[in-house]
Length: 67
Image 1 (cartoon, rainbow, N blue to C red):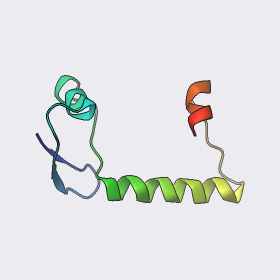
Image 2 (cartoon, rainbow, N blue to C red):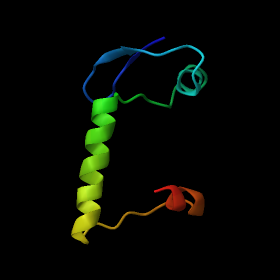
Image 3 (cartoon, rainbow, N blue to C red):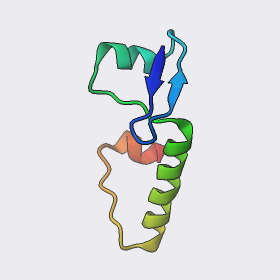
């Protein structure tokens, strides 16, 4: 399955049997981000959290424990 990153428009190939590919096929609202964009956003979010001026509203306890 070919997918395009929503941020940098890079086209990647996903294996059809993966969970992400199934989500993209069955629910068009789900979007794909390439690994580099995902890592960049993760790094910058952690930097903002470290400043103390950025409040991150988490959605559930399970996600908070994983974060």
